[in-house]
Image 1 (cartoon, rainbow, N blue to C red):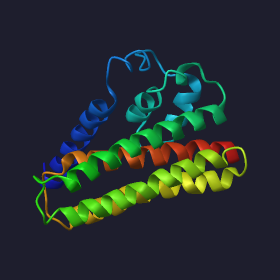
Image 2: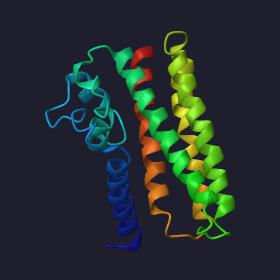
Image 3: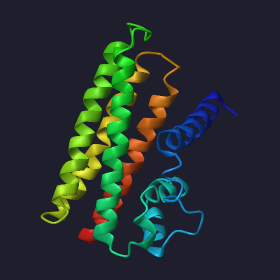
Length: 189
């Protein structure tokens, strides 16, 4: 197996671990069901970049399993996306301000914070546009993923391998952007 495939598997494993570290707590245990997802969730997740991670991501909210309305699911997904991205931004900002962080990494981390702020704003815009303009909501959900791309690009230029957790957070930002895009595309279609 070549080093790229090993790296991709390591990032995927870190992404899953970070996802559950960020969101798994006794209060969310009831929100994540071990049952099969609803047909609505399954239909949405089949269109995303990763079905296996989409289902638990949406089921972080206790309203998800009983939701049968696509617009309600869109609102839930975008609320989760805002919470996840805000949490990740705070984590990266704390790292950027930490005295233990290498000074050479701080500019890249500050750029990631800036990119995540834009993603939070885009997710919030998408959420507010659900009742007004689905095509704009779809656009904003897609654009929110640009924060992950920007952050990943600046991190790759630092040659810092120890930022695996941020790369995992970038992956989940991309996943939530994709979920929001899929749902709003279905709403507009």
